[in-house]
Image 1 (cartoon, helix red, strand yellow):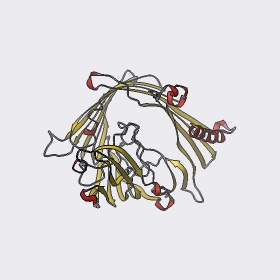
Image 2 (cartoon, rainbow, N blue to C red):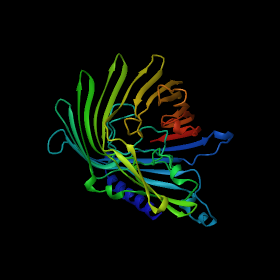
Image 3 (tube, rainbow, N blue to C red):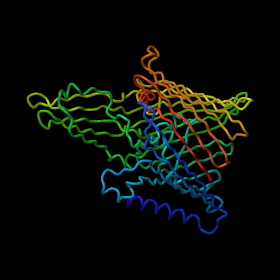
Image 4 (cartoon, rainbow, N blue to C red):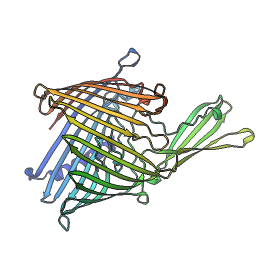
Length: 452
């Protein structure tokens, strides 16, 4: 609790420092989102322990060319974390919440020369032209807190220097001081141990103790990350090429040690680390006959990752095995898409994606087709939405290896700054793949978002 208060106090001090007395230079904005979700499986409707959130952002121009931004996000959860009577006296368990410093940075425009901008601090650096399904957007770690919010990211501390040429072409360089890991959901759901079957090693023994260790030695300046991007416009089409050297934000398992405790039980220790990689990106976007289109591709050069498994063997000699988690082979991930608004107000968005965010081996990439229909009427006060996606893992076995989701939603906007939504996530699938892994996550939800 003391750490939370320290974070909140630090954000408050920064905010009040920026506010000052010249209110005309300040831009304060924010939102409050109430998000309630209910599982529909097994004829029961239990509430999901998911967070609602409030975000506050303050921007202030300290001078004509100097901007400061301070923002924070508060996430508060539905269910109490109390597990004993003594916990009833602990407010942080009764009312679980998290305070997350979001973006906190300063940006100096026209530094030394016209067109040269420097941004320092915790910031969201968005690269790529696709609609959320960006293959070249690798500078910030993924935010998997909400597994249905595809493409969400967490801002990270960085230094970004960008120069805009007189013809509006630009060159951007980014330095990130250390590895930034993924933010996973509280409920887990991601398997870092690969697909190896341990039953031959365990036999009838029961796992009674388990330890998980992460190589935190990578969180230092020696393992900083770098990126550069060149962007230009030609024939009314926006292009960019990019290069990123860093580490995948989702850790990979490097060692698994099974230790005998007694004749019928064992303990397991797993060690994980972050894999180095180089990524070359290309993207473009434009419009043809009022149809917007985009495409982006990333060629990934992974360092590769192997896991070493050690287990007790007969006669006291350990059994040592190795398995490949990620092959040391280059592969390409890409997204193409388009959107169009019909004359009667129907909006269509469609994208094809080869390789999802959590897929990082060229031999295990799946194909995804994602679409969204929106229809507004009653002067845009009411909106009907139908979203969905289909995953193909094996084109030769579509009936046994697949995954899809459907997301119907109705949105009512009684005021300009308030949206109320009622919808559902319906997911089905078999075999491997991101969508099929969510097969038991059918939900209905209610959301209300007020913005200012």
